[in-house]
Image (cartoon, rainbow, N blue to C red; front, side):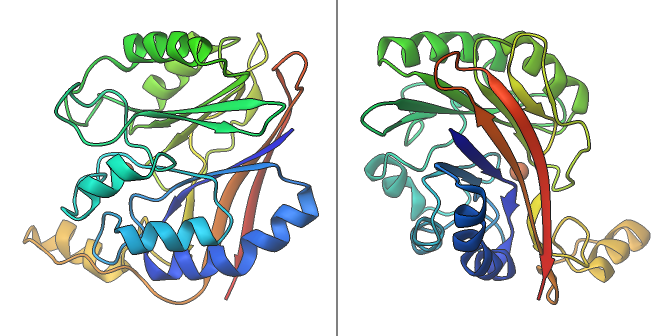
Length: 261
Ligand code: FE2
C-alpha cells in the first residue's frame, strides 16, 4: 500500500499547486491513501470549510491540522460534522470540537490516522506520548490494520523521540509544522517509516510561506507586522511510504519535492 503524506498547505498558492499536481502524482506513483496538513491553507492563516472542501476535491483523503486548527470560528461545527478532518488529539477532552483520530475504511483494510501536537515551544497540551498510547489502543479496538501519525511539532528532538517511542506500533510517523522538509527519512528499527518534517506546499520564495520582506522587517525593526503569504513559484513537499499490508511495516520511504509555477 502506498501512502502519501503532504506537508503543510500554505494559502491559495499551495491549494492551487496541490490541485494542479496531486492527481498526476497519484497516478504516477500508484498512491492509495493521501494525508495532508491543511491548517495554513486559508489566506491569513488557519483553515476554512470551503478551503477544506477544496483540498478534499484535489484528492486528499484526510486533512490533519495543528496549532492553527481553531483560528477560524466557522470551523468548529465543520470539525464535528466531517470525520475526515482531524485536529490534534491532545487538546482538552470534552470541550474541543472534532476528533484527533479518524479511520479510512477501504473494505479489505482499515487505516487509522492520528494527529498529535508537540509541547516544546508550543501550547501546553496533554502529553503526546500518553495520548498516542491511548489512541493506538482505541485504533486497535476499532479494528485498524494500519496506523499513521502526523506529529505537528516544533522541536526535532521531540519529534524523533516520539517516533522511536512509537516504532513498531504504528506503520508511518511523519512530522509537520516547521514548513522545512528534513532529509532524515528512514525506516526505524522495528519497521515504522519516519521523517521529522514533511515540509510545505506553497510559495517557493518565502520564509515558511510568508513574504520574506515582512519577516525581515519584523525581526529587524521589532514591530508587529501583518503576515501575507508570498506569491510566485510553488513547491509541493511530500513523503511516500510503502507499507507491507501483511506485516504492517514500512518497506520504503521516498522524500519528494515538486517545483513549478
Ligand atoms: Fe503549525
